[in-house]
Image 1 (cartoon, rainbow, N blue to C red):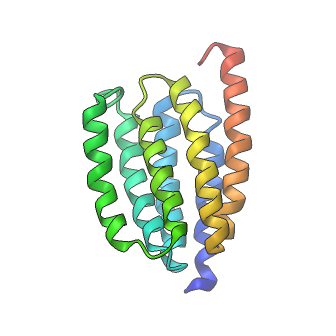
Image 2: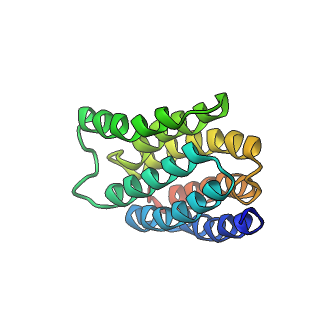
Length: 167
């Protein structure tokens, strides 16, 4: 199935690039959650199991972060959630490349649960760069292309939001 892997990444790419153009935090994060599922599928087919697992966790965190109820949850809850999600990733750890999605997952959790859209827009690119390194190592080309386009989309969305007072 690895021949089909990039196509799942391309669907995720389309969804996530569009998502960062939304002004509303809930729309950004909901579209991200769906895109992350497609990225998890691609990583699973590439046998990047830690990355696939953490993409599914990121999808959950993104959906939770989209809800006003979970926005700005206390740091101790973020730490507990992240620790629980990282435990299976540590068990699946197979190479140094698995460190990148683990650290990216921590930054993503901070971004998704930040109190403000500005916090989301500040922390998310850090995780994206770490995912780009991981995706390059595993040859997840759809996601690597997505990472670069996501960074451009994040910058464009932040610039647009700044101009409209949305940050």
